[in-house]
Length: 223
Length: 223
Image (cartoon, rainbow over all chains, first blue to last red; front, side, top):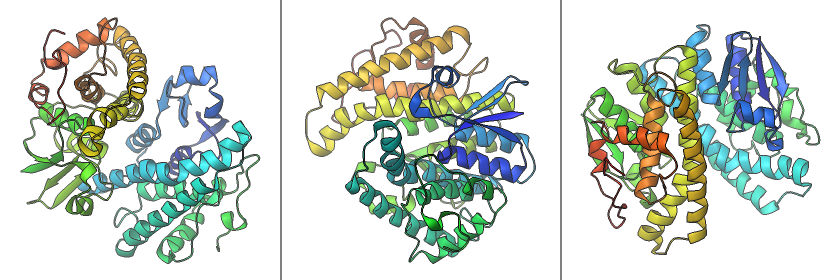
């Protein structure tokens, strides 16, 4: 049985969990708080980041959300999440990198730091200026996603893919932390409403991070 | 003919060029300075980052160094750079992410900003404190690479891989910018001496970035 080391608001772990859900791979959740820098976790992953997946019986440890997703894409044929031609697959990977790097850095990471880590670790209030800037940039990202969905069936093209899962993972964490204003982003809102009804996503939506509560609309199909 | 948009000290473009060299893929270099934020480049890649690869005849644009490397790994059979079993491939991808994200963020990015961008764009001297911190962290990274090479034939295991190319790309940029002290890192130094003699790397070593000069030892096989 695979073990997945993660915490409820880790967007990279959410991306992996969505992929495992789509592919029907079972796993056990192990709670890990990377900010605690636990010795045994650092021994397993010197980068100190979640997610990490371990299959002790098989002696396999997988580290880095991209390496984990590619691993299951290669080993589990069901529901290809990097589908299509080599060029199609490059577009999926481009968008995954966009969400994992740029959306994360500009929006998700500051929200996580201000609204979660500062509260749990430093016991400090969030910086309103940083939150405002993150929400402004979130709006720009939603504009870009509106544009993608306006002329494509799914995020990366005609097929549902890891790009949709990555966007769902990051936007859902930003939404949990009150960083998303859905007004004026109808294409993205409709796409996200569809995501909320996927069996791979529903279990994640019902989980809560201690101390930090999501806004009322967070897990509602109508929002 | 592929065009590669890059600048001489972009570590991500270097990684792609090393892979293309190993696989024998021809390409034309197009100089792009991401800090200039040229409109036509932003239209092509909204992330505004190098490398970007374009094959105009085929109508293909590849964006993001990871997506580009996976594309050529899938389409060009010669010299597999993500070799082995699914678990072996996950280890290659873990280390590529380590070098691209952690080595880049802690060492290469601050060196590039202080020694190149500040000089070219802001016409300011580097901050000695930031440089010292980057060089200290470089030393920690070299310790980790020493450890990897001490018990493996190559960076990710028994086979030469993209992990070696990624490490070479980032370390070579850090070395160009005077950020690497090779003393006390004999395993990594010997491995890097071997890299310097590879036909895929030699052309890159002879290129220079305007205004910024490398230390004397930079392109020497003996250093």
